[in-house]
Image (cartoon, rainbow over the protein chains, first blue to last red):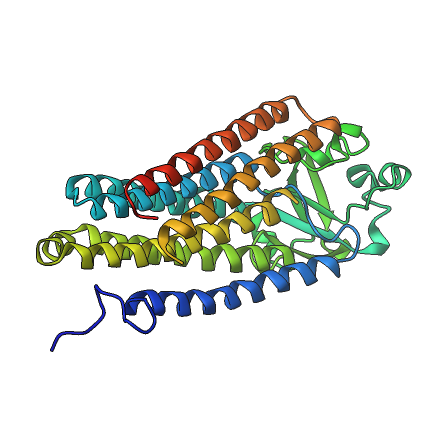
Length: 291
Length: 68
C-alpha cells in the first residue's frame, strides 16, 4: 500500500504529511527549550549578588561554533536547492559539508569545551570567612567601585584527593589570574578570552568553604542550566547528523533514483529541524557566553 | 513555513546576533579590556554585512529558480 501525500500536498491543507509532522514536532520543541530558557532566566534573576558567574566560558571558541552552525544551515539549504534542480552531485557535496559541520560542532563541544570545564575547580567561601580571603577576593575594592562581590575562588585543583578525603584539611588551588591581583581595575570585569591558571597557589581551608567541586552540573545553578541546555542541544545536533548521514548514504541515492521529489521533501523536513536546532543556539550563545 | 522561508528568518536572527556580538565587543572594550575586542567587533560587523549580502543573494536566487 502506498502512503498518500508524501510527495504531493493534501488538497485541503496544501501540505504534505511530513511537513505537518515536523511543524507539530517543532512546536513541542519550542515548549521544551522555552521552559529551559525560562528556568535559566528566573534562576539568574533570583541569584544573590556575586553568585552568578560571568566569563567562565571561552567566547572565541563559542563564536567559532556559532559560525560553524550558521555555515551548516547555509549548506543544508543549498543541498535542498540542488535536489530541487536535480543536481545530485552538488546535493551530495553540500550535504557532506553539513554533516562535517555538525560533527565539528560536537567535537569542539565534547572534546574541548566540556572537558576544560570538568578540569576547573571552584570553592564558594562562607560569608563568615570572606574577610580571611580578602587578598584573593578584593571585595573592598569591588565595593568601592559599586560592583558585586566575589564569593568564589576558582582555579586548577592540585590535590584532587582533597575532594573525597576528609583527612585533608585544605584545597591547594592554582589560582585563576583574577585572584592573583584582585584590586587591579583590569580584573574588575570578567575575562571572556581564555586565560590559563597561574602558578600562584592558594590554600583554602575546608572549614571556610560552603561547597567546592569541579565545574560539574552540581557546582552551581549556572552550570546546571549550562550543561542541561547545551547537552540537550548537542543531542539534537547529533540527531540531525544521524538523519543527514542516512539521507546522504546509499539510501539517498536509491530514493533519488525512485522519486527525486520525495528525497527533496525529506531533506526539506530534516533541514527545517536543523534550522530550528541552529536557531536555539543563536539564543544559547549570547545568554551563556556573553551576558 | 517552507525551508526557504525559515532560512530567511534564521539568517535574519544570525545577522542580529552578529551585530549584537559587535556591540558587545565594543561595550567590553569601553570598560578597559584588551584591544582584541576591537578586532572582534570589526569581524562581527563584517560578518553581519556578509550575512545581509548572502540573505539578499539567497532571496534573489530562490525567486529566479521559482522556489519562492
